Image (cartoon, rainbow, N blue to C red; front, side, top):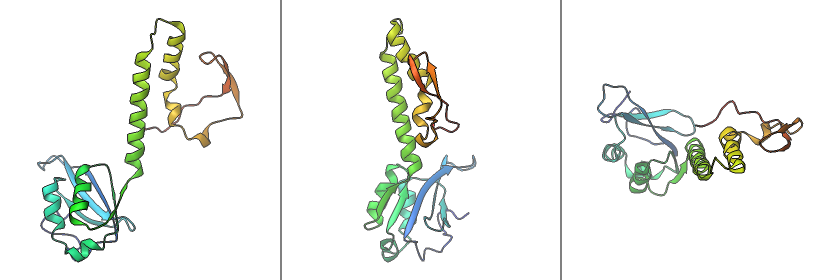
Length: 176
């Protein structure tokens, strides 16, 4: 693993499409998270830095010539504000792409917070509102289910909804 002063590719070239990310670091290092960047097409590792501080990233990427940095066309990032700042300062005109995992995670968290906020508005001592509360409490995972996996051919009666509906199966994989 090359960190900081050296680079796996010797600072002589950058791919046209980069990915920036971080990962949890071993306990020996001062920082809890390290920075990693790699080729978005080949997934080949370019380098790993000991932390993800903007000052460290800036100093590292300044080792590349402006010509090399100018050739980068796109950067895939999570929503770390430092990565946007770094790209705007040091890499002329890249397309910034937020990776879909982090985007889906953000949407899922927002949907769940909205559901909880709505549930907390229900007065559970009122029978109709208590049913709405239980619907949101019990079936929250269904919002995360792939619509193509929902069984629309088998139906059963659901007491909470007071009608016949498709059989409700919970997803096996979801984002908490």
